[in-house]
Image (tube, rainbow, N blue to C red; front, side):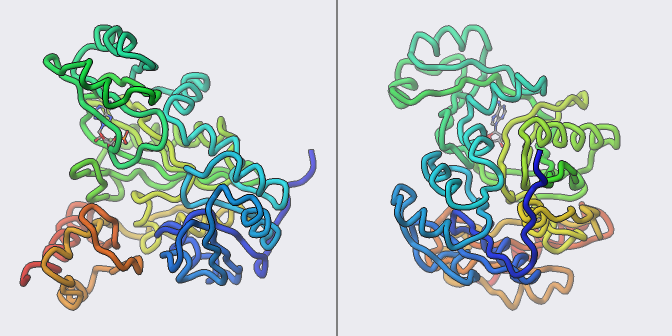
Length: 382
Ligand code: AMP
């Protein structure tokens, strides 16, 4: 096997996608002396504002994709739902990490679950649904409550329906008709956790301390690090994440979202082969952020330490905070232990991720109460 290619500082890294994950990646990459080009359908994107070059074109514009790929050394992603054909075109022009195969697996819930089953990894019971008859049969098999999820392109709880004993299955299926879906058994979890793990081109893996995630309306609201879970459960969660990265043959960074059951058992919910919202804490609180780690992995460098410098908590800032005008940034800045991150997005819509805060504390609970207080201060006087 030939040695994996290494791209040293001065090289140009391309990022597909233009959101905040690419923005923080661009900050990390530029700090290490790399050039960053970004490709997405939009202009003046959060990533584009920090990149050396921003290309606004459709993912199915073959000429634009090939031209973009010829202008970079290695391509990575901040968004996994890039069409396979786009990745295939780029792969003919430059190195692509992680590979199109990894993206293909993770951009489709059913393929992802079948991969996890094949790798012997634990996940909630599920059934593939293609018709109303499948749904009726699967609900009887898995019991209620259960959750119907679209197989493709779902995130932040979009495309999900909880099914109870009295749910009208025909009416539910009518909304999914023609869309392949997955029915999942309901998981009575004690906690939602995630692990960020990186795997280098040379096969080295580094995982981060476990994140404890709290959601509001299906969107991540708060992350506490380290998660307040038993040491053996944390060790198992990190080990599972490493096994997923190995089994995928990942080169890059991966978030593994998991459910912790009351008895400490862990089930894998979802994979994202890119930096993840729950890993934002690492930008301020880790020796190597998830973004620098992605850069190191895709450039073929040795990985950095994932060690946490201090207990911390991250709170998302959604567009809802703008309902009564611009939030009071000075009030949040008055918390000396709080870091403010804003993504440069112009339109603050409800549910849109506009930025986040990170706070430190003697323990994760203290950090969480600080970060929540700072977020509250943003709107307290409004
Ligand atoms: P997902 O888009 O699959 O990550 O789901 C979004 C959120 O819905 C999760 O973070 C959980 O809070 C909840 N959820 C999803 N699937 C299940 C399940 N099988 N059992 C219980 N809660 C779930």
